[in-house]
Length: 213
Image: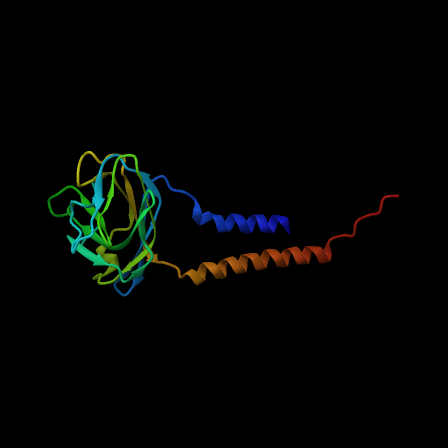
């Protein structure tokens, strides 16, 4: 039974592992909807801000030397629902919009990804740690399969200034719909049920201990 509890503890701790960079995972929810899931952290090499504006400017974004938005150009998507937030050394803001801009197929060399925050601008400076978490759902996509190219893309440059170094972000574009949380719960329950049943069955058929004379 002790091994069973150790295994359960390990499974529950899996999603909590720390990441060495900022990561965004994009999943197709169907019907023109998608989910951005935020994780990880990074230490900033310079000063800039996450903006709270009516728009998210391309200057307030990362750039990647690749083409992975096929039809989305300089477009802002507001959050429909979600829990996404940014933490800069204990100062929090909610992420309430994303900015996507395809340049690699329009004569330029890079695509861009940016986020906007609520309440007020969130400034950061060299040496501070930026962490983000949670998810944000958007709607209004023409067609997920046509709008995005599946793959993993590394953003290694912050547009606002060359002084911001070591501030990297990875975008993972998935092709399939994101599983509902209940799916993970059912899988965990089924796995634990199977282990408990095998343990119980072994106890029924296990040979009795032999007494020593």
